[in-house]
Amino acid sequence: MIVVPGLTQRSEAILNQLDGLSQAEKPRFLELLSGTPEGKQALDEARTITQALEQRLGSADLRDLKKENLRLGPRASAKLDQIKAIARIVDRAQRAELSRQGDQPPQ
Image (cartoon, rainbow, N blue to C red; front, side):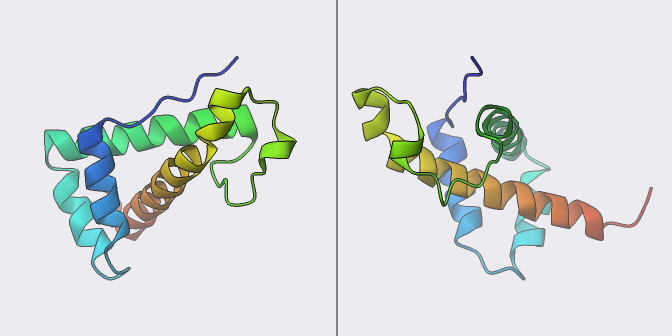
């Protein structure tokens, strides 16, 4: 079984801040994040969660995930909305980071 980790509180706050920015503001914010230990940790956690979701569920985009399509116990089923919210934030952060990396000139 593939375990999908959660975000630390600080990383969740940082990724929520990123998620609240306009598309034009995200590249600069990501550049600043990648230069700090907390920012690097948040981006690393996002990558780890994205990879685990893709391995476990086939995608990190859980917008269409339905409880009835999963075999979850009652406790896990109750947390599905929280899992979907984290997955949304992580997916958007990962996409923004990939977009920023693609916009950088080759080194």
